[in-house]
Amino acid sequence: MKITYIYHSGFAIETESCIVLIDYYKDTDTLHGYVHEQLLRCKKPLYILASHFHPDHFNREVLTWKEEKPNITYIFSKDILKHKRAKKEDGIFIQKGDVYSDEMVKIEAFGSTDIGVSFLIYLEGKSIFHAGDLNNWHWKDESTPEEIVAAETAFLKELEIIAKVAPQIDLVMFPIDARIGTDYMRGAEQFVDRIRTGVFLPMHFGSAYEEANAFKIYAESKNVHFIDIIHTEQIINTQ
Image (cartoon, rainbow, N blue to C red):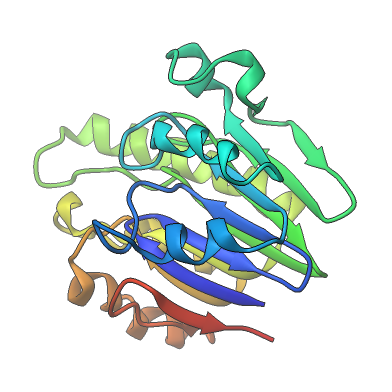
């Protein structure tokens, strides 16, 4: 299985039989890029997942790709339909609690602490979690104590739901967003504390690579294999 970091929260997962592209925002290059030059030219079936309608997670451009690559399956959070970013006939729309499954992939939708869903993906015997905008968005430096408690309570509630279904996950993609301020890694810490994680990939950090990779120390203290993300088009090969 090959994982390619696209940008921000965007990742491509490639197996022998198919490709899964999650939360495409923009390509790795403004003119060409990995998605346009490689994935859209590949003959393998392509699944495009979008966790919610925010423009740093969903780009309507993806809907035009079927004109050049017909074997695309679109699996979007229902809020994308609700906010009229796509039409009903454009894809399969799912919400928390829904499951999509075919002969290649199984996708379970869990909740978010912002909007949309997070994804638990089963692919070639591996479990893969993409958080979307699920995080402990506590904004400690500017929120009231009540807001901080509410944010943490909401996150821990969703985390518990996931943990009951998947107490162990092979590969996790989770936000490490320094814009939160103090304790910006708290949600990720709580995630690996509760769910046994094999490999951890940071996301949702834009170009703040150093801040995102700072989570490595805590992750490795919990026996989690942390992958430093250092550039777009970075390829991570997993067993």
